[in-house]
Image 1 (tube, rainbow, N blue to C red):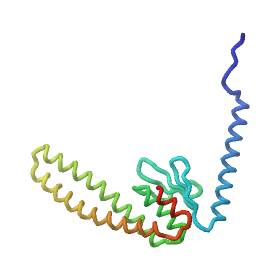
Image 2: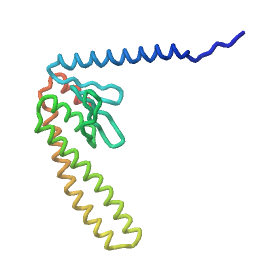
Image 3: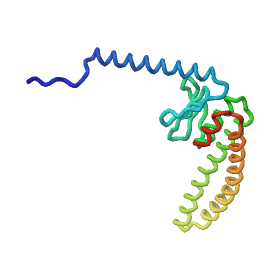
Image 4: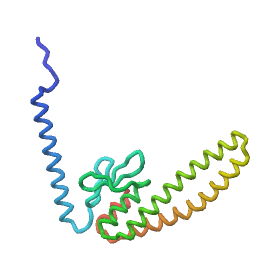
Length: 177
């Protein structure tokens, strides 16, 4: 008995690729029409990504990237919730709130990175018996922690303001994130 090949012929692969492209295109068209017809922004979780209004939030190695409807990167956030609430605020024309969320997220993220760096340099100073270096980075660490605490508080205030936008059904979806 002759064994049958389990691989697809080249023409079958081409047809399969065309079908996948058609279904992807059709899905994008349907999603765009739903987004345009809704009064409130739609919040959908597709895989690990979120579609919010005309934007998409995608997790990357650097943080959470905001993409427009052409998949062009717009900005990067350090944390997921601020990225999602930023998109919702932008979709509801709350530009001041959106800018506040973006700047506070950036500030908290940068201060967190600084804190980690100062901890490592402090440990390096202790390990090398360099008291001056250890004292210097302990002081910088202390200052950064104080500023970070304030920045986190500001970010939480911005996020709370965004969570209570009048978004209809979307409020329920935000609380589940």
